[in-house]
Image (spheres, rainbow, N blue to C red):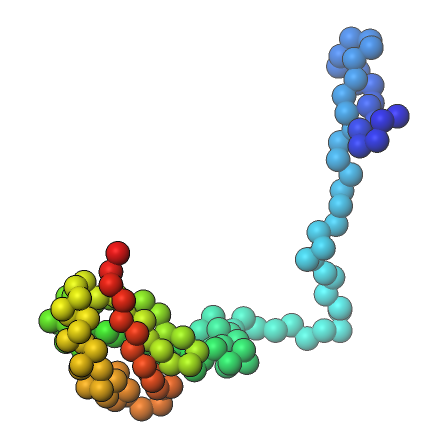
Length: 138
């Protein structure tokens, strides 16, 4: 018998000499487990609590707080600046990458960096944005 080929079985529905392949053998799913009869049943927990516990345990909670400046960008810096900029990301060391439409705005914003940092870091309880890196939009 060839390797990898299931054995054929004769079927009574087909004329003599025709065969069908054998049905696949039942393989237990590795993720399923039998519950111990003595194990206490748990009640479902809210997803927000489970995700919150995971973020705290994996130490990602601070990074999420730090990255919250990206969706809050327009409120923090104002509509005029938000129209010509787009926040991209915040690195672990607190560097905020911002895309800017023109070189003129890039120069203006680089001069305004201390004021922008004060506005971004005004909210207490989150890790500070230490530096703003400006780059031209593509």
